[in-house]
Amino acid sequence: MGLPEVWNLLCRFNSFKRTNIILQHLRMSKHTDAAEEVLLERRGCAGVITLNRPKFLNALNLNMIRLIYPQLKKWEQDPETFLIIIKGAGGKAFCSGGDIKVLSDARNTNQKVTQDLFREEYTLNNAIGSCQKPYVAFIHGITMGGGVGLSVHGQFRVATEKSLFAMPETAIGLFPDVGGGYFLPRLQGKLGYFLALTGFRLKGRDVYRAGIATHFVDSEKLGMLEDNLLALKSPSKENISDVLDAYHTKSKIDQDKPFILEEHMDKINSLFSANTVEQIIENLQQDGSSFALEQLKVINKMSPTSLKITLRQLIEGSSKTLQEVFVMEYRLSQACMRGHDFHEGVRAVLIDKDQSPKWKPANLKEVTDEDVNNYFKSLGSNDLKL
Image: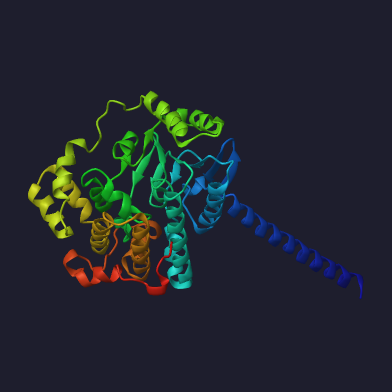
């Protein structure tokens, strides 16, 4: 073998080795990136969960769920952990929702993803709802969809003037899941029905006034509040509550501003207290006020199927336990994944961004009771087990 051959062989070996090192590094960085999507730390008296995908507004994915759930369970059993805090990195969002594009992509490639993600997400939401340790969510910034599921079932939810809450799922052919069927119908009057059907956004102190947050704190005080909570020595639920109450009482931002929907609450309560979406629409048309007509315009853009399953989800959820609601919502989620509108909604809003989804069926009267019933059917042995 002459020198050139040896040289070629060496170069080939080196590039093979180089490629291998690069591949290994990519695999590692992929792995570490995945691990760093959530930071889990024991600090002071607390376990602290930080959602760490600020570039993606801390959107929740399956990997994050799989990191949070076992740690939550561990801290719940740990006698040295008195409190669990969850927050988002980056200041813009607590958690903007679930990674829905992944779900839509999985339609053709891997249906197991859509089963696993909803099953494990709702299992985590339920674990938060039944957590034996005080659970404090800092819902600072955008909090929608999956982010609501990580916060609203916990004992304490702290909003700031930068909080932005919405359940906008009817606009993408889905329904307000993550336990929306439980907490929305339990808000004052028909507020939850209004928020669910229209996707109306609540900001700042209004998130507290609506009953979604338990406390409101000026955002510049959030760091101090966290430090105070972490410094508590073997705190009881009451001790934690006292600290939160003290900060809440001192918060001045928008203190004297009335709830944004206050002047409309009577209308919301009467117009949205119907058992069918058609009746709600008729109520809005008959009312004819600028507020009613504005809501009508919004509702008419939503998926007709989503509107019908959402109204029924809330009516049924109003008398179910949280666990029963998750079982119902899991059935709905799987039916939506099999259906047309969710994938069309994702296409229109996230992929082509043309904002003009073509819903099927295109109007309410074509969505039959039988269609709606099919969404609520048991999945037999595939039902969610909590």
